[in-house]
Image 1 (cartoon, rainbow, N blue to C red):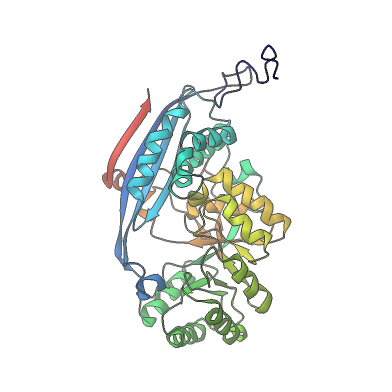
Image 2: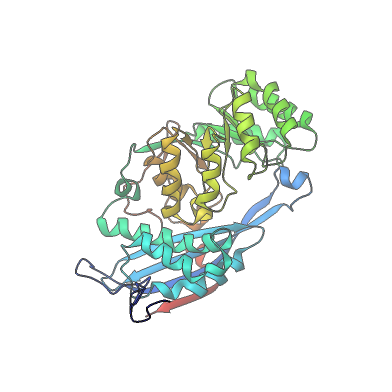
Length: 396
């Protein structure tokens, strides 16, 4: 029989939000969440559109988080969604954001766990982590501002500039002449690499476009291709062997994002490096790729995996395997994270987000330069406010 006089558990088990201790210097006063829709200048198509799986992209939904503290510090973070999910991100963020009120904004890892457990019923991936990401990134921005440092310097930068490549000019919705013109514009602006989209139902069309781009580039900068998950293993292997003489920097998303075994096969069989990871929505999902030696370039997206806290976990594991890093999209965030990665990375240049932020990132001699501004170094424009459709503030 059990001795009921002896307690087997503490009378008051630890809670997610402990009372502030003597090391606490500040507390979160308000959390403001906003949902905005950024319209694109023209509809965008990649292979997922040409294979009939998605519609052309016409806008990007953004979840913005702005936090203010009792001591007068503030931060800005964001997450995003393409084609669907924007309102879901906003709704889930609104359900859990009040858990931050009164907390020490410096305890970012603990606050990530607290937010995750507050919405545990929807899991630890997808909308759940992407909603947390906006708040997590905001807290890191705030922490760097409080320290008076650019985020890259707070994390411990290995470099003050990161090699950058352009993607936004190479979509399948652009004619080959438009792609060539975009390449010329990118190179004139100082871009250090070019990526074009492939993965159409007829691979021969991809090869013809790739031949035209290769001839136009004439080896001036590295070239990457991106199939957006639209090949099967046989097609990816055949295509990869055909293009090996081109010395591509990488083949991106040749297979379904969750096919770690298939990517590992390609990584073993092909001389061209393999890159993937952007569509995964948690650190654990990236671990499957890393454990399987499935990629040469890991491509996490901080807003998708749950923010900077989770991104850094991925980087630690990738570093142990000496993998290269090439974060997806959101260069305003990823420039800082790539600058802090031990092995020479790439960062992806997209001009789509320029209307959202007052500041511009400098590109020089093929590299994107870490700004001297504190935190992420970003502030929202009037247009970003105009495109906002919903706002909620917690605390006060």
